[in-house]
Length: 111
Image 1 (cartoon, rainbow, N blue to C red):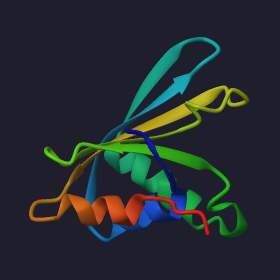
Image 2 (image 1 turned 180 degrees about the horizontal axis):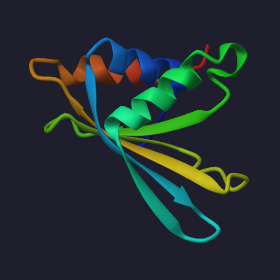
Image 3 (image 1 turned 135 degrees about the vertical axis):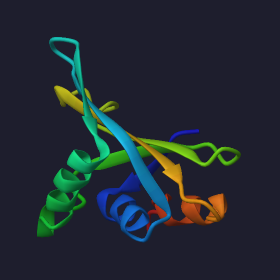
Image 4 (image 1 turned 180 degrees about the vertical axis):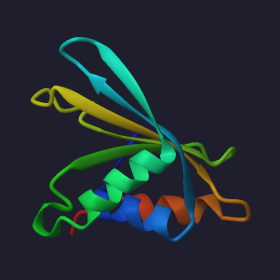
């Protein structure tokens, strides 16, 4: 099941070594083109976004976590009809990390 998360929550899960980036894809919806980028390039760009102050949680994210395998896919822009581009990042839980803790870390709860 797809759930909401934020840039900050996703960034914290990555920087606290709960999740490791495998790869990412950038989809241009208009021309139906997909470009794959490596994990290091995504991380560099994501670090920049995460330091953007007031804009850090401007971008909405959704994720799906397989609690058995620890594989996680997070995306931004896929469910936004106003966005011409979507980003999908493929992650995996680090060894020894409880999958429930990842879900608790990522799940956005409205207050």
